[in-house]
Image (spheres, helix red, strand yellow):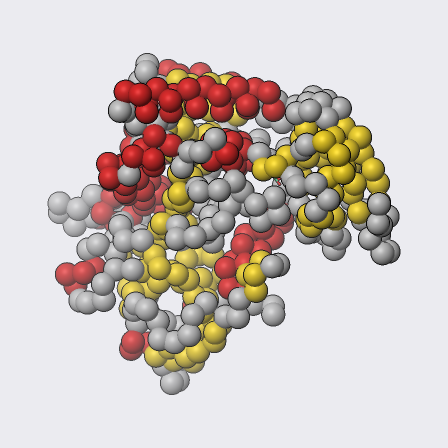
Length: 427
Ligand code: ADP
């Protein structure tokens, strides 16, 4: 064993079906190495004698089916071994889904469409990652549908997206994100505009279904839908809407009996609703922690992630060259609505934004909608986005704003959608 200079190393011998859980402190880095046996991190197998690095705030479980020994280099905030994990139940869930895929293959049907629901911090994203990695490891091509606008695993916060999974998640970095389909939502909670949220869910369902019609592997692979932790009121209605838009076959409810009963009552009888326990290892995250993760996700978009460094561009954009919109007008009492107009229309309405100093630091989505006047405006809400920029400075005198962009000028399109989300570039 060659110790990493300056870092304490601790060896853990794990029995079969146990996991080592550890958390990385704010300014620390922990390295993990598999010494003997076999182990996986959230469904992705570890290679022996390779050091995996986990940065500040990471919360990791190293699970072993057969038993193994691992080394941790550095001082984790906490590290302990647990025998009590729901991994076997999760694996059985995967086996049941795989059974459905086999049957779909045989009968020329479509594979399982699975929605994962539950309150925040029950391990929804982790279960999605696990099921997707297991599926891809047995040769499937499942699709990840990300509806968690607060903590998206695919794109920047404030978006919903779909991603075709072709290889297991990278142990350190998660799923490789190439060519996801992304829609602009604009804020970190569905409640800010539930009509828009439901509309975008429908858009994703439609695009996914179209893809299934032309791509047999995508159809058989099915999809795993990650949802928001908001499970009451309109949040609950949004889950019911999603189940119907995607015509889901299976709903996995994590650690919430009432939600389980409600969905069983409200969804059609052929939908299998399954209650699963959460893992004791799932760590509750504070508001600050969530905000930091969001910030990090935006930073990653512009600057890359460890092995892959990007160099974003900064340039000026004239107000007259772009059109900036916010989706959704502030709601007004029904009695004040123009004749023939409903609240729905106001929530999906494009409201032109006059650039001013308060635009500074806002994240803007670059819509893929064709540039062009009024006629084109109609399709903007339902058009995917092709990228994001951040406004770093606004000069109202010269009518110019400075933006941070992943690509050099010019902007690929000129229709911009404003998010509530702001990003202060500290690089
Ligand atoms: P949700 O999607 O429900 O909000 P996540 O899946 O994002 O929850 O999990 C919350 C946090 O807990 C994540 O940082 C994840 O890495 C961590 N986590 C999940 N399962 C475990 C586990 N078994 N041991 C340790 N940490 C875990």
